[in-house]
Every structure is written in C-alpha cells, then in structure tokens.
Figure 1: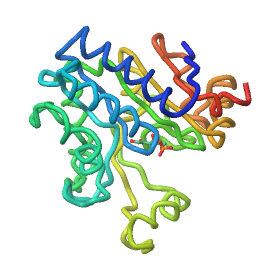
Figure 2: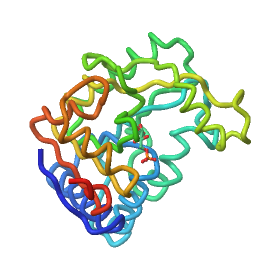
Figure 3: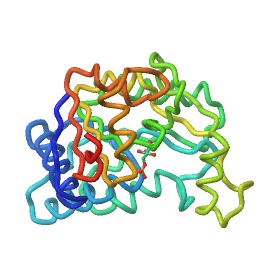
Length: 242
Ligand code: F6R
C-alpha cells in the first residue's frame, strides 16, 4: 500500500488525476474503473482541464463504472450514468461505445450482473480502478458484511442509505431505488491497480480503521491492504488520526 499525502481537496484531486493521466498516457487503450460520489468530482475536473489543454486523449480508453441503481433509467438525473456524463464523459473525447455502466433498467438481476462481468472480462479486466470510501468502509455498494469473493451482484440498500439518499428524490423515500448493481470486491481486487481517494475530517476514522486496522468483511475497504498495487491519496484531514 502506498500512501500519498495531499494538503487539501484540490491537491488530492490533482495528485489522483496525475496517477490516472499517467495510466492513460502509458496505455492509451487502458480500461479505467470509475466511481461516482462527491470525492472524485475534483479529479474529473482536473482531467477535463488537462484534456482541454491537449495533454490527454481519451479516444481509446474504455470505462467501466462501479455501480448503478437498479430501476433507474439512464436519463434519470439521479442515475450514475447521468452523473458520469455530467461530470466527466460529456467533456472529453471518450468513445460513447466504450462507456460501460450496469444497466439499471434491466430488472433481471442475474442476467445483468452476468452481462456486466462478461463485459469486464471481454475488455481484458480493469487497469486502474478509482474508488471513494463510505463512512462505514463501503466501496462501490459493497456494504459491511459483503462477501469478499463476489463479482457483480445486486444489493438491497440499507435503510440508512435510503434515508440519506431521499434528499435527491424530492425527500420522498418511496422514489429512492431500493436496490443497486455493484461490482463486487472480487472484481475490484482483480483490477491491476487500485486508487482510493478520501478527504475531510469526517473520513479520518474510517481511513484509520480500513487501512491501519484488521482486514475484515465488516470494513469492506480493508481488503485493499492485500492488493499488490494499491495507492491511497488523502488530504491532511482524512489522515489526521494517523
Ligand atoms: C460511488 C460509490 C460509493 C462512493 C462512497 C463515497 O460510485 O460506489 O462507494 O465512493 O459512497 O462517496 P463520497 O465520495 O460521496 O463520500
């Protein structure tokens, strides 16, 4: 495990974007595993900036995203498909045919998870997987207790997650999807490189627990300690308990 200490959110974003851009430069047809959430937004902004300056070319890159809500259409403003286009894909020259996310509208979970695993396999696996971390140590939608050996699967969202997300759905709990498709820990661990970013004081306890505590399914991100090429990029606040 490599730990890169950044001063603040902007510095964390730039350092992580540097690692991703090195991957794209070294292997223009690489497979990037991407994440949604608030943490990577600054990374995407930085990559877009370098793309606009002519320093990066995404035309041969394939992307596979971590997760998607089951039941949401792509066009839904809350879908992860929408998030990724708004924050990243619409601003770079990635080939739309090389963009992959689980299809939330396929309600046949078994079929959809198999289809997604087949895609990851067909593109040759993930070269670099970008991750954020939840306060309970989740990565993707792999919540505490998740089995380490799963590929893409369908998860039931915890009541706390539904409650936390209802603000994005007009405050109406009934509109919040109750399930999601997520890459499993096995898929994440098979990525050739893993890059996890965390910022803010509120992430400090989980950063300490996940990366300096025991490896346990109760803290899903802790398994990354066993990954042969894992880099953690944190701002000073997220490392403040270490
Ligand atoms: C995102 C994802 C989640 C987030 C995590 C942290 O695709 O799967 O695991 O990475 O919830 O979210 P933020 O970055 O908003 O703190």
